[in-house]
Image (cartoon, rainbow, N blue to C red; front, side):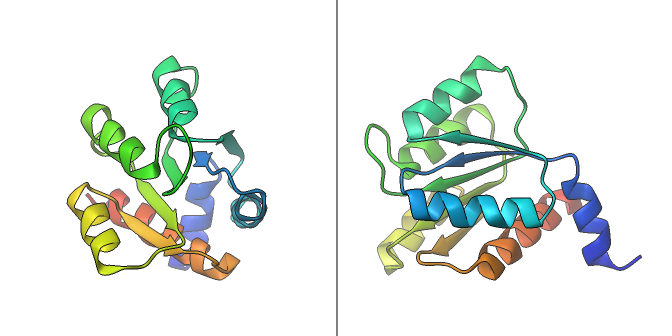
Length: 138
């Protein structure tokens, strides 16, 4: 079995929390997650709702994919809160900004990867594979 098949099988048990307020980005991300055969995807419209979902503990999540710029609580604020309580949680940030200061802020706060919008399904799938492969090796 090749590594891609092994990873796709690993996706069969994954649970993802998608935190996004843009309908188009949600649709692309959901399409990618469906193509990867990830069975459980929960949606949150902003960081505050995502944090409430995580703290409720009704579901264990294996990956967070979050937008950076959202109302109520930004993706960066969510990342900081997640790192305090769940330091090993894989976290991918989606952003419309690829400025050097964004990259530094995200890395300094423990983001595992980021994807610049607009992104293709292939770009997001590649980042998910890379992040989960890296976490599995640790």
